[in-house]
Image (cartoon, rainbow, N blue to C red; front, side):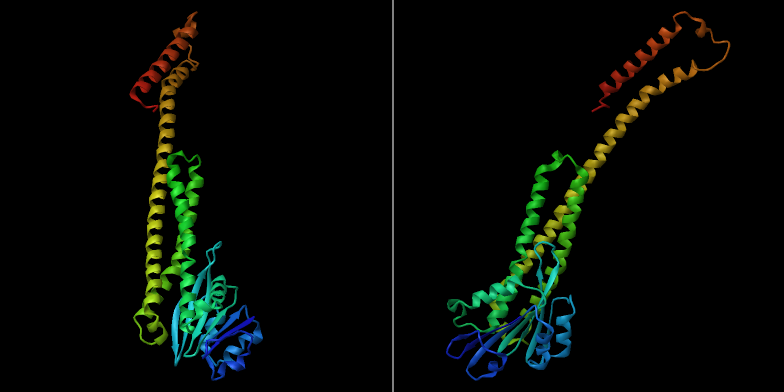
Length: 317
């Protein structure tokens, strides 16, 4: 689908025009959005807009690293949105020219849709141009990273609050590893976006960005905060993982200690049973009338005595 928005010199908004009208003298700036475009619409990138072939190729081959390329007076941006459920990066591209902006995304983008709705509002659109549209798109993409990280922080806080009361340590450990994997996926999106904003703020090649410097600085600050949140959460998952691994080791050691104590108690009893299980002829005790009861009593006393001694030592704690 192809959507067109154009603003005239008088500030009038036009949305029901064709591409041929974008070259009219009274069009101050325009925004063309390629939303899930078909093959014939994709060809317009070359046949009508005459964008650089390498930029068009980057649009069609996912996923590129977030970047900006400069082609004469047109600047090509590759940005990443974050799918809220799968946390996979979804590419959103746009071409920023002297008179307009062309956005391109093969999948539906709620961020672009929201910016489109905002720019239909005369109060928001007043005094703004296509450079402000570029800012809004980048800002909305970055803002939508926050809910996912906040959700992960809530999960980590819940895990931390449960502490040792969590009955299934194996399930908890698997959940922590899943969270670390999610953080890694988010990090692969946020860090390149942060580097891209840093390049934009320190470049004079894009006049529109220079005019919106304060706005883009705010986005860069958000990305710095996101980076700190990711690193903080990764450290927290590492601490929780180490804590639960230590707790599991302690539980295993406690079980092994108990089994070792029980084995130690039965060692002399097994020895006595083994001695009187031998079939030698000259064993006087075998002829005792009460020999069985005497040996059983000795074994019981020995076992109870060792149990009481180990209990006093605290080996069953």
